[in-house]
Amino acid sequence: MPPAPLPQQLDELSELLGGMCTAAAGALNRATAALLESRERLAVQVVAGDSEIDALRAQVEELACDALLFHNPVAGDLRAVVAAIRTAGDIERMGDLALHIAEVVRIRHPAPALPAEVLPAFEKMGRVAVQLAVKAAEVVRSRNVLLAAELDRDDDEMDVLHRGMFEVMMDPAWPHDIPTAVNVTLLARYYERFADHAVVVARETVYAVTGQEPDALPI
Amino acid sequence: MPPAPLPQQLDELSELLGGMCTAAAGALNRATAALLESRERLAVQVVAGDSEIDALRAQVEELACDALLFHNPVAGDLRAVVAAIRTAGDIERMGDLALHIAEVVRIRHPAPALPAEVLPAFEKMGRVAVQLAVKAAEVVRSRNVLLAAELDRDDDEMDVLHRGMFEVMMDPAWPHDIPTAVNVTLLARYYERFADHAVVVARETVYAVTGQEPDALPI
Image (cartoon, rainbow over all chains, first blue to last red):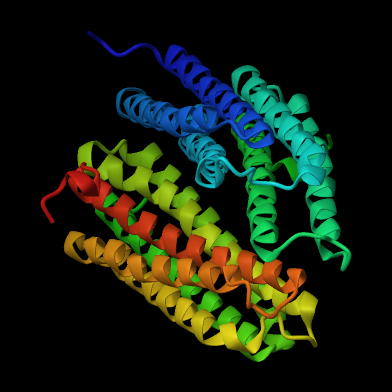
């Protein structure tokens, strides 16, 4: 069978990357539910499901190599293919971070991984992170540069939540022990990193579409 | 000026990636010295120096795109170019992690970032991580698959050190406060992640050279 034409392969790449982002959003959504409600079986499902995201990354790279081999793309098309390779790496990492959260839940079960009073903040971090991943999916599918710019702003909310978590723990009146502080620290960092990768995915898409880093654009 | 022949461009890519790894090793070495001895100026130098590693990544991507544009490489050569794009991302991240360590030193200065009794363990983590980065530099320069296999084993030492750090903190007799535990947790994670990226760099090189994931090889 002859290879598909380049525009079709580029569309397929966008579609695969969008699917990866959606899968990562779903994984984080489930990991957060498992974390908030100490649901071990749900955590195990998230861990098991990560291999699907890894398989999607392999598909992206295979398709990207096909596009390079058969069509020798130039200019914006070449940038799109190179960006797809980079972006797939970031989204795979988002899946890994959802997996790390689920693993903490699984290891601590039946004890909850977090003390009750930080749950609302983690619920918010989970919501913001999932929204970022869903928006990143839309950005890679639509290649919408204006929408991409929104992710930088949305991520500020994550940074505020992340910093707030540390301020809570730094209060000498914080009533919990060191193992709890270690868990809160790592879990908060997983959410913050997940969100950061979603932002990078959007920025890489901007670069692919415009040939410029987002900071250089008047948007 | 006509573009260089493909073999020369591939050599240049290896050389640039080796230089990136060496720079990341140097940054982590200095960040560790700054951490162990609370040296603020050294920490500031590490933070300032990260832009050089970022600039090297941009050079790698530019050269990789040139190679794709002008030579339309196939098979192993195409894998080498794609792996270079991926690998540069991992090494840039290693530089970021050295920067994060230096930032903790800078923020805590003149107070030390770590309590005295964990310094020997961090000194070891720093040594192992720098060795991994130096070996990764040799792997990307030499494309030596057997040497690459060593990194997986070397990383086991980091995992032991990293786990040991958590065991120390989990001891109810651990005499430090929550802010200290938070710092130890994050700093230990930065070292562990740095080492992990060095291993990934070696694994990507194996894939580029052999077309197979390292786990599938009889080495």
